Length: 298
Image (cartoon, helix red, strand yellow):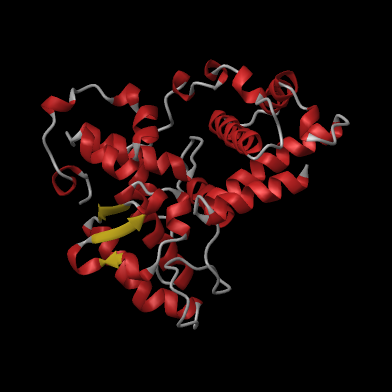
């Protein structure tokens, strides 16, 4: 089973040219699925039918995994089984027998949103007199100003920053480029961090990753999640806050101030906008705006 997964991941790298973070997600999802199947005595993918896969997904639900995590596993399995059939490992795709309605609708509960006052409290937590504090303040300012995903933040390169014109440049899936505006505070704190904080954290002139840890290595997804818990506790915010919360809060604050829906979809992508549907109380035709005008801290 591991051999087929390894070959599938190699295919995603060499033929699909997917990012390292996307590959990591596929690997994690398929490894978790394999672990469950092998614990039930399964040793070959040919033994797996749709009922076993439904059992896997139900087990993940009973483990209280997030809806978004389970939906991602479903997506990973669909892609993996398409590959298995196309490359003649299997003749039948069991995922074809699992209706798409089995996918969990993440919209049953609107995402947690922080108020502008709670965002401000969060931003005040880091101590800017230390290199780590400068990094944390700059990171929070970037999250609040852009609604970026954690995967985008940890791979953000110095060369992608255009602070003189308050923009940053991202390259997404399939090489699609996005230009995202930065708020004035984000630019100010990024400059302070890059000039005074980052040089104390790393001396590696070849390392182009913007955000680094105390050991001078690129900050990880786990590192940001750990710091987020710390910031939220210190800010005394009584909500379940993740980096995704900042992303959604960014969008809702823009919406509340009248931002154009198409602008938000360009910045955040379709899936994020779908999650925010409960907050879209104004028709796109009635909204005319740009980021600079409507971000509360621009």
